[in-house]
Image 1: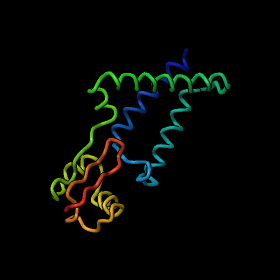
Image 2: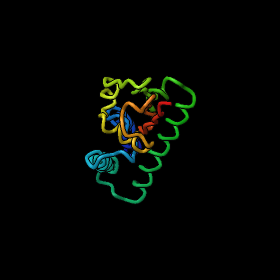
Image 3: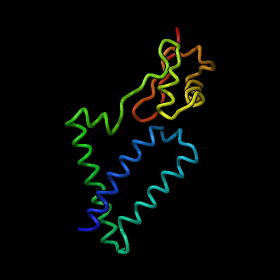
Length: 146
């Protein structure tokens, strides 16, 4: 029972912590961000399995985390508010060619992140962007000016 409680607590703490860290697409993670994520997972697994490193305890921890994930998914389907809290909402960072630096800053992103996405869309300058939206998953969608 202790493993179930620890795994549940760790799941919710990690979910909350990752929301605080902000959204970044996995393809856009810097080496520093990858290190942070691996460290979070490594520290968490130690607290979940504690001194009991048996296969049964490991399976119990994995199944508990999976059950929590299923519960969160079901709750998100039923509640738009919870869905917005957990997944976030798309954020427009460029509108009609005007960059909103405060929104970009609140997402812990910099101009270079935006321009990297613009270059993937074949754009070289900020003036070529009509709209740029940071999606819930951290990807940036860029729309070209006509």
